[in-house]
Image (cartoon, rainbow, N blue to C red; front, top):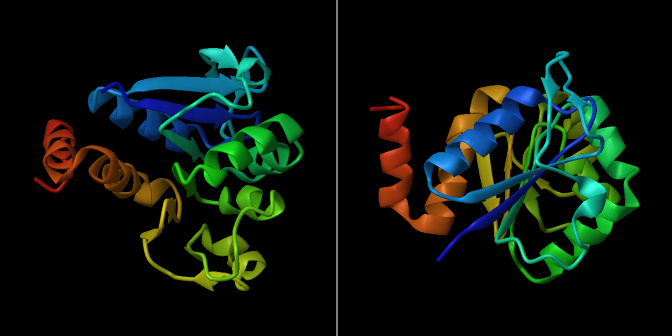
Length: 184
């Protein structure tokens, strides 16, 4: 079964998180779609990325197995202002499909009102206070049902390997970890 993954990418998104997510998912054999808000997206550190498709060209009812939001303060702000992405994520999340958010990206899920107060999550430390009304954890990776969150660039590999484990099993996650010489 082909696993379809969507990674939205806005101007100001954290490029290292997006690259880590897309790279490890592709190593796991997933069909990855990087959807940019523009035809050339400039990440938070100035890296220019050419997305596979424009975010506006993704149908709001497309069936992705997983959607993962990278962080980056400005990128997350742009996510929260994007009503098309909001519709995509609400549709996806309501179907109880796996959703990931790293760094400041849980703020977008909060803005879309798709989380309840019992949702366990984590985030980049600087946005923690905006998420304390949820069941906030200071762990590298937090799983809460079909939502997985992580803290930032430094926890991205662990985060993506957890997502791979949840989708394809521990053996696949270990295989990808060994391929990149992570915790071997």
